[in-house]
Image 1 (cartoon, rainbow, N blue to C red):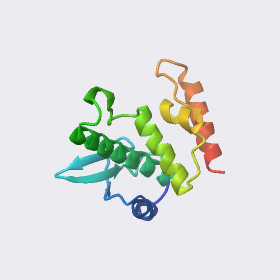
Image 2 (cartoon, one colour):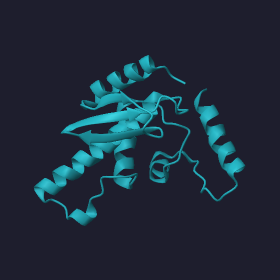
Image 3 (cartoon, helix red, strand yellow):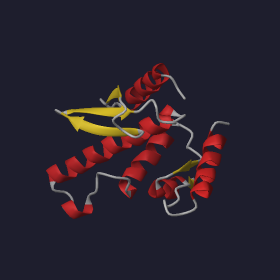
Image 4 (cartoon, helix red, strand yellow):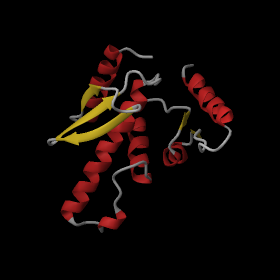
Length: 152
């Protein structure tokens, strides 16, 4: 697993390139990572105890949430789109488009797989999530294989 220093380095590099103000915070209060706004400031929270090997993937994922929310807020403010056509929270196609564009514009290699179906479809990568009631061993094996291949 990457050290805190590695996360800080990757975060600073990506925030500078993306021109985003998101701060980085380490906490065990989140499962893996989370983007949130507090008192008008945004923060990307990362759990260093989570088994996440590539900081750039999580940071871009969370940065896409920031951009999606800002885009939705702009649309609401300008009354350009009806509210029901705008989604800004979650892993929708709008978030996935933003995330794919970030990978492309920054020339960051895509992961081999993801648990987010909209992103997998748009990026042309493996959708590795299996429903909890499926064979747990099979689901874990698929995801572990994708994680192992992404190290190469």
